[in-house]
Length: 288
Image (cartoon, rainbow, N blue to C red):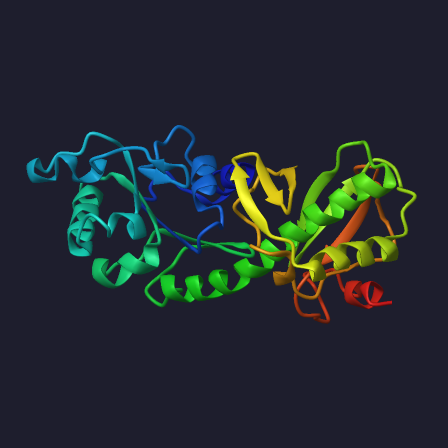
C-alpha cells in the first residue's frame, strides 16, 4: 500500500489539489495508502492509536490561523469528540487559506460539507481514483463499491497466506515468494517451478478453510492462524476465520513470466465469472 500510495501521488495528484477524500471500510489500508501518498505527514490517528491531540486543524480555528500546509482528519474517529458541522467548518476555513486537507471516511462528511473532493479515492477490493465533477461520482457511490469488494480482498489475502504456508511446510519452498495482485485473487511468484501438484495444494488449503481456523491480528508484522504465528505485511486485511473464505480455487498449471523469469501460482476466491480483468479463461482452468 505504501508503494501504491506513492504511485498514485506521482500519477494522479496535482499541487493544486486541496481536498483529498478517502473512503473505505476498516482494515482496507487507508492509513498506509495516505502515508505512501504523503511521506512525513503525521496522521492524527491510525490503527495503532491516537497520534496528535488536540486535532491540529481545530487548534487555532478561532484565530483563523493555520500553521501547517497539509492536515489529516479521520471523520469517523473525530465524531467521538467533535460535532460534524464543526469539522466541516474547519475544513472550509483551511481550504480558504489554500491549505490541503486529507479526509478519511469522506462519505460521512460530504452531506454536511456540501462540496466534493478534488481527488476521491476508494480503498476496498481495489483502489479507485477519480476526479469528481458536478455530476459525480459522489463519495457514497464509491463507498458502496469498495466496502462490498473489500471482503474479497480479505479472503484472497488469507487464502494467499494459507497457500504459501502449505508450500513451505509440505513442499520445501525455502526461497522467498514474490506477491502480485489479481482481481478477487492473488499471485505467488517463485524463482523455480515447484515440485508440487497444485490440485493437491488446493485440497490441502481447502481442508484448512473447511476446518474453520481462527485468524487474528498479532502485531504489525504478524497474524495468528490458529496456534501458528505467521509473518504478514498487512495483518489487518484478513478474514476472522478461514471458513469465511468463499470459492477458493487454484489454477492447476504454473504460469511462466519471461520478464521476471519466475513461475506464477494463481489463486482465486469468490464467485466465478467469465472474465477476470483480462485473465480470461482462468476460471475454466481453475475448475478443471
